Length: 111
Image 1 (cartoon, rainbow, N blue to C red):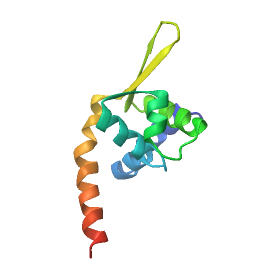
Image 2: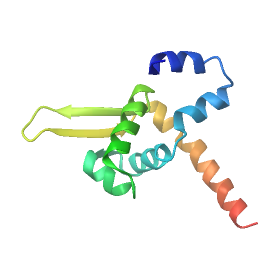
Image 3: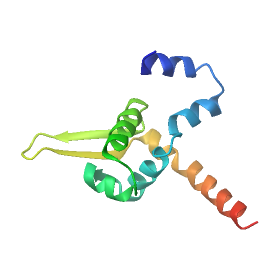
């Protein structure tokens, strides 16, 4: 089953499960947070901001997030080539929820 078929199938599931499938995974939230804090990052800058991520995982995560409409990839036709990543409006709309979740997590840590 390809990515588009998976997306269509998942749309019929619970909205919360659908959302968690989009942002789930070890690297997506750190990528989203780094892009939010820095607005726009080049690939290597983003790799430095997300501690421990491999090139393969960063490339794969960015591609999937771009497919879901969370990340914009902008390529400049210059030498050397330059590619920048930033959050879409849908990606930015996640931030208040992630901030609330972080506050809840902090509260739970301090219990």
